[in-house]
Length: 166
Figure 1 (cartoon, helix red, strand yellow):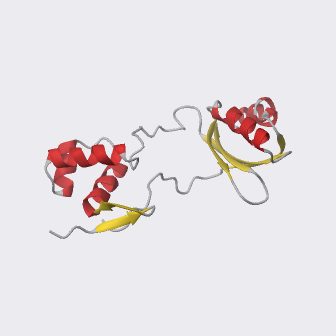
Figure 2 (cartoon, rainbow, N blue to C red):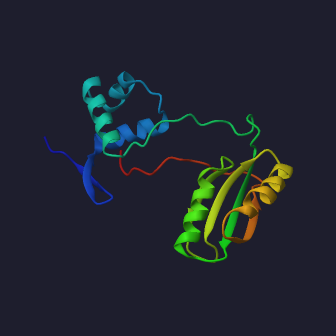
């Protein structure tokens, strides 16, 4: 039997069935092993083995529920550009450590361009963001300047990665 293998990150380890398993789990992380096996056309034992290998090899990082921020008092999303006063390793390290412990900061990305970091935050409303900006954001180590972008409408939000042909 000919096995088609796709190169992902220069590692030729994923075949079409692996990609179908990943696509199915990406759409429904709570799918039963039996249903997953039926979907990809393998036995439950074979699918369980592949899923365990995909997890062990780092293709599957974990499983989590997607929660509704509106129902949990975090309906306002705000993106923040952060410019640091210095771009030295110790300033970067201090900033990164401080960001890690703040639950309001959902994502933090070091970027190339006119600023150093892009933050994604969630708050209840603008008053909560204003309080966060004054007591947390502007107090983070090394922050020289910030630019705030309050999201008016979320058009698309996905965590799904493109997986190639399925």
